[in-house]
Length: 162
Image (cartoon, rainbow, N blue to C red):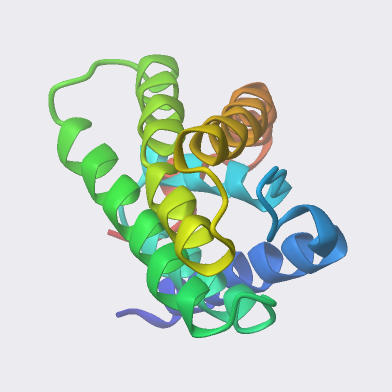
């Protein structure tokens, strides 16, 4: 990995952690509202952003009150959803369409977080999946115009080296 790509990945990871911990009480509950999840849209611009995102999720989840479970389920959900988006991006045209698809994938895969919360707190699975999915959908949907606006200024396609 080139130095610039490594530095960009580190910055993304640090931003993910900082934004997650800024609103920590709303990022680790049954009604999740983790604003840092909008960084997941970066993989639409370049698949190499996945490294920084996943490292950010790992570090942020070290601070989770759910402990090692959140490292397994939270990181697993992110890796699964990001991988699906990266693979599917080959067949989807346009950044907006890819971001909408990414939003749907992250929303649906919140079932893994619902399983985690069901196992730990015996919360009802379907209700918890619904509440987690709604929070994820809201953050990812709001993240689309935010990330597209940032892309106009920063140009995410060119920021990280291929």
